[in-house]
Image 1 (cartoon, rainbow, N blue to C red):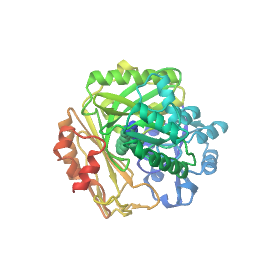
Image 2 (spheres, helix red, strand yellow):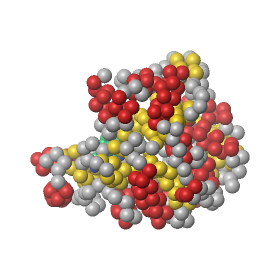
Image 3 (cartoon, rainbow, N blue to C red):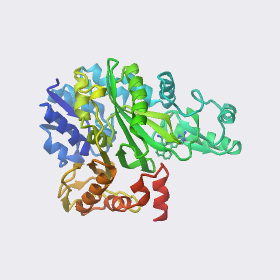
Amino acid sequence: MFSKILIANRGEIALRVLRACKELGIQTVAVHSTADADAMHVRLADESVCIGPPPARESYLNIPSLLAACEITGAEAVHPGYGFLSENARFAEILAAHKLTFIGPSAEHIRTMGDKIEAKRTAVRLGLPIVPGSDGGVADEAAAKKIAAQIGYPVLIKAAAGGGGRGMKVAHSEAQLSDAFATARAEARAAFGDPSVYIEKYLDHPRHIEVQVMGDGKGGAIHLGERDCSLQRRHQKVWEESPSPVIDAAQRERIGGIVAKAIGDLGYSGAGTVEFLYQDGEFYFIEMNTRLQVEHPVTEAVTGIDLVNEQIRIAAGLGLTARQEDVRFSGHAVEVRINAEDPATFAPSPGRISYYHPPGGLGVRVDSSAYQGYRIPPYYDSLIGKLIVHGRTRPEAMMRLRRALDEFVVDGIQTTIPLFRRLVDDPDIATGQYDIHWLENKLATW
Ligand code: MV4
């Protein structure tokens, strides 16, 4: 096992990783920008290193600074958290070249899944169900028209280097295709420096359902069930739950089994998430994320498995602590993202937290780096914490969510808490009847 880990992140996820290290008896190194000198992850770590000025490009994304911090402190491994360098294949390679362990999958697997065309090809090879579409990239408008005619309209043009919804264009008819194709290509080139695009059948009312996996890097892998992340705004998830309200145990075992087999065959190492669209009873692979995700606590709540502890053990070559038959799914969990934002306009609301009182009690977990007197800097994303509730049933989890939101006090800034107070009482949410468009449609009526 490692004796010292450097955490190349900030905020609530840096605390999450710190806690896992502490339980394993591993020394921790926090890194921070000059804007984060007073951040909680710096206070709780055994050591800390300032790695640069506020812009992430010059601090949390600054690979030479991070290498220097490892060198100075003697850290043997780096946990990247999510965002920042967590899906940067080059970072994984550079760490290896310096005899440091990247706590995550191989650079090769990160790179494959980062290219959405390669990821889809890999998914097909591994036997995952995919959205019908082009076999690889689409070079020109004529090729696009030919494929669209085969799969039928509406179609969606996606950037190979995309993901997270950037550079997507829908065409409902051949008349709309030239424009959609040209715009998608131009946007892909501008946003990613890569104009490659591919085409898929457009699914008009799917849910976003993702399967959590852990691979041991030696051909073994388990799945930890699914998360329903359909409630999003502008491709930002706001509410995640497990199990999905529309998936039963038999469906979970079926899709989970297919995904775990695929991830084992790939020789994948560490935590990963395989994303699907789910519509009319069918799963369609869209992408794979090769990192720990923000919403991992809902999976931890229903399985009792500490995903960060598993990540660290796998990176240390110790394998998984659970076999598939040891994984038991218990009850229902919901996570809501507490962002420092205006709950109506979603405009960022940085500033000083004048009073802070998080909720507690049975079935309530708060993962947050906030504290009373903390000044939220304006340079980073607006997530200040996550509220995760667990109950034996979905109604019990919802009851706890309502109560915990009532108890939660964050004064001095605006947060998304009032949004969740409305959502928890919505009849469609109570019955689990929502798709990926539900939230934006609802917000438009408020
Ligand atoms: C789609 C789709 C409909 N049909 N693909 C958006 C983000 C990226 N990860 C994939 N996305 C979508 N791909 C096909 N063939 C609709 C979306 C989509 C979406 C997906 C998940 C969650 C929220 C979404 C919001 C808008 C569009």
